[in-house]
Length: 60
Image (cartoon, rainbow, N blue to C red; front, top):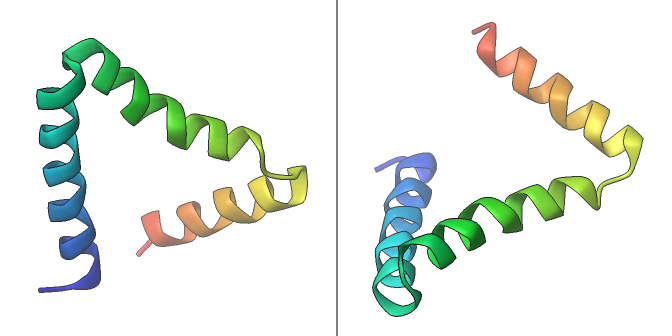
C-alpha cells in the first residue's frame, strides 16, 4: 500500500473514532477546523509554496 493510502486509511479510522466519542458535529468541526487552522498559521510564502505544489500535482 502506498504512503497516501496508509494516510487515508488512518484518517478514516480517526474520523470514525472521533465521531463515535464526541458526536458527529463536534467531530466534523475538529476534522475541518484543525487543518484550516494549521493552514492559517502558515506564512504567506509557505502558503504560496503549498499552493504551487498542489497545482503541480494536479497537472500530472
